[in-house]
Image (spheres, rainbow, N blue to C red):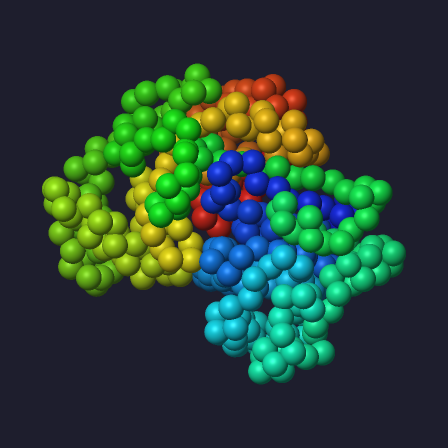
Length: 364
């Protein structure tokens, strides 16, 4: 997407599902698309973010995904948690990738880092008061992006300031496998595959047949693994006691394939399974939850919605990066109907969609 700078001075990106909405990808895209000056985040050290830089996937837990945009200053605000070892590795890796010391545009709130830690990381001059930094930026007319509830609550922004909220939500909600909190309408990944192939979703739409049975899917994985010279795992077996091993092997193969052109073939097959970014654990999945989305829209009152994982509902549009190609595809009419349904239920425009792990597409 080309750079666009005409938006409100403060943009707040909120999640509308149970997490895993790809907010990191949305934030990264918006930093480049809108030319964001300051990105504020206040998440925990075990959070996971995915960014694409020069065609390759990179994961971070501490530094916000806006690092891919050279003009964006990165702010770890009050309320965030710092893991010194993780942050050190990410500083080194990002600086090496971008050939520029990321510490020159990294700010950390004084309440979340000790003097000694800042000194060891070479960040002594980058310790700040988030409230002062952000409000000074706002007064100068610089563009600010705040990620999530924690970022907004700890940014120090005056309640009187006007900001524009964006709601990021998934077609099929997900949670970390280790998070045993209730996930409404939860289904297994096998059920998900059948749901996408043969049944109607809660929105009342019948997705395109994927053409993969579970058996064929596992056989395809074996072929891809052989092709890439990856660990020779037997993906055709999924009996009792092998499910966890299967997930580990699948994740390993997926990670090795990312970054190479043929990896997109693996990404296409990965549509049946999803892993939690930081620890690469298998996720839990659920059917669309329109009631939760409606509640999120009422609470956050977003200007517009970013609908991610649209390819989960319509697998044949996977990887399409141009909106005209999507609506011109055989399932284009069904996609439009789906989006109109979301807009009607939430009373909010859907302005962006996502069809693969590395794109955000503007609807036009």
